[in-house]
Image 1: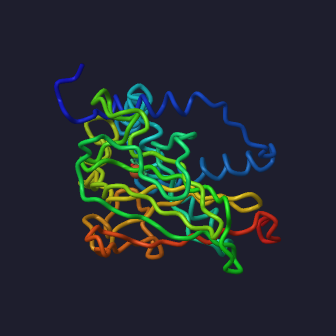
Image 2 (image 1 turned 135 degrees about the vertical axis):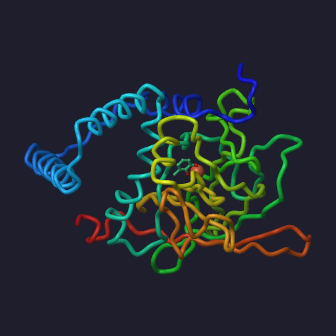
Length: 288
Ligand code: MBD
Ligand code: FE
């Protein structure tokens, strides 16, 4: 049991690594394509080494650092913070629906199904400003989609995620839910405003950030996966206008289309409407 109230990189990182390893991932990449990618990666890395005349001592430091990232279980963290946004960006250019963003390391499938108008699982004394998050899921023609699935997960008001809290005792499905749109495609979720997220920086990911004099912060964000039968799944994040770190996300995952600006509703509760538009999977440009 840790005495610190802050999840360590090794604690939350190992949980993310263990969850990731529980699935066997495969891809139908052809050997030719794989060879072309590997060759390019190596030759571009070689160029960087030559350009900067990387020394043997620097090479050994790199080796040591790579080993410690693995030992600390920090690969999901490091990769999703520093690389995933390139993958997401290069995969989403051709679509017309709502913009995607990175998934990050803390998604868990099969969160409790709560219907179309519901409250996120949360503790009785859950801290944080109440937030009503509602909207409609539509197709490209503007029709509401009945029975679309809206998965929402986010940090609590201290910036911690359930199931990755390194023993803080947050309930298993806290602030994680699956919602299903009503006959008009609408959903309405009562939750709380998440806090900005400080990625755990007491391990090799933190060393990496310190080495270029960076900061470990992500702006406050909601994570979402939205889909419906015959529609392309969108994985995305939503941010809060004017929020801290919105212009300087360590993970480079903010897009102008993904901003929320909640205002008090008639009950005085902060409320924001966000509509999702889903591309069809049969869209000819899908097979790019
Ligand atoms: C997060 O919550 C997150 O969204 C990302 C991308 C990386 C680390 C923690
Ligand atoms: Fe996150």
